[in-house]
Length: 114
Image (cartoon, rainbow, N blue to C red; front, side):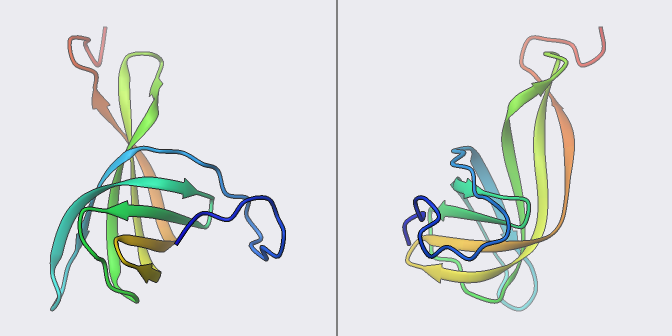
């Protein structure tokens, strides 16, 4: 499942941005699983990511994405996403975002509060 280039035939209402960031994912319930991976692209409505193992379709999933920007140059950010996998092919999966929020994490060697 390769990211689509341009807008030729792409009917998505939200533009996708090619952002590569490390992530961890968790599926809870009867088919509990967890793994690591990286984002391929994302938009305000969804995320395409590559995982260290296959992820099934129609699964409730939680992602913790190490956001590449820092807050006030003092704290790292993690984007926490709750969603549902809508497509899966091999070790790539597409997730529809149901809820998301940024949370802070300390940057190594720097105080969170000065």
